[in-house]
Length: 334
Ligand code: SF4
Image (cartoon, rainbow, N blue to C red; front, side):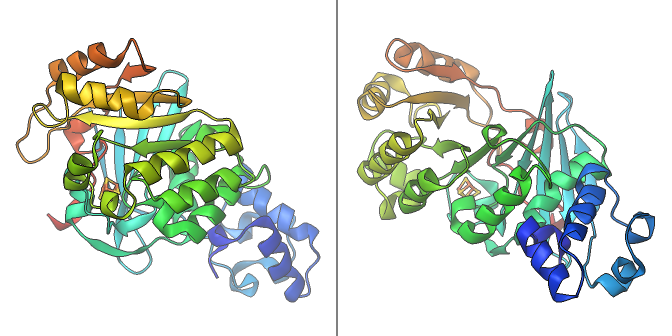
């Protein structure tokens, strides 16, 4: 059984089933998540029945296959899973902040037209342990500080709902990975029913919605999920989320010059989001398959909407190593 997939309660139940007292769960969790030790032989206060194979748990960090470093300090790691599949995770240092972007699926079935992950197709969902394992990798294998985490790697987190929820419980648990809920963000392409459910979860994690277009016609071209959950339904779900949590939602809007920018799109976007407790991140399109970044179009789009919406012009990090949003694609296969 995979240790990293177990919540504290599940670990306690597992140990009780093996005739071990409940408090041993806390000891084990502290060795792994507080001291970064995964070899039970080194866990000095554990009895023989909890050492090595006798415990029956696999406490293996994810295997690093390749690391790429960007000129801006961003790093991308290709990690191998037990069944031989690969995922990518990105580390973004920024002053006192250090954010891990983690994957939730091997590939993705959502098929967004601008996304390299979408183009490589869907293989499978990640287990909660494989999700937690990415954060663990940066903090304890690479020994780097982790202050924030964003479900924004490969895959659609809300399409792997059960495993995603459990992973968040483990990441947030003060006795496990111990990252505050407000430091965790989920980025979604817009699965409306799950956004509603997200608002009902006990954790105050942040919501970021990839919007990228102000009309159904254009958004459906870019993001097929819009055919299933069109803008009206998406915005309704976001409103419900805000009512339930009173938290500000972020909308990501990648500007593709000539496609979704200009005064008319700006006007429509303002009309769509006016009155919502939200912030818009405008991002210049990343270089992908020969398309160059054009910050001037994004700057102009910000100028058009900034008097009516809270907006920030973002620069993607790590685009020279294909680590920016929409660029991850399990590069080992190329
Ligand atoms: S942008 Fe996100 S949801 Fe869309 S295909 Fe890429 S990984 Fe999937």
